[in-house]
Image (spheres, rainbow, N blue to C red):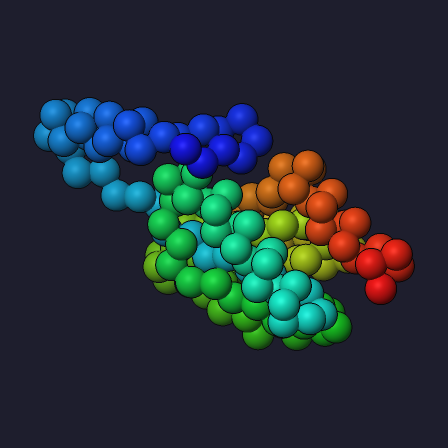
Length: 145
């Protein structure tokens, strides 16, 4: 059984959900999302992406791609984030999963503007719950060097 926050889905839960969908005669597609990570080191990007992927799968979202890049460029100059937005506009994915809002931009108004653009395009941005983000914030602190 996999647990993250308040969502727990055992293999039995997944089978039951699938059986209910099949019994209804409806074909229910899992929502496709992209995982977006902006972190300095490659090992950190991999660890954060893995946590984001787990979070997405717990919501029954299908991770279409994992996009990562260094956060040293401002929001308008992030090619992987632009790619994620284009994927929403082109209806390849419906959402973006990230660990912290600051991975989009350290400027909150930029994040709000990005979210609004996603919404107008029919997409969403979701950020891992605080308890997951605190783990990453701790790793970023000076004591972890």
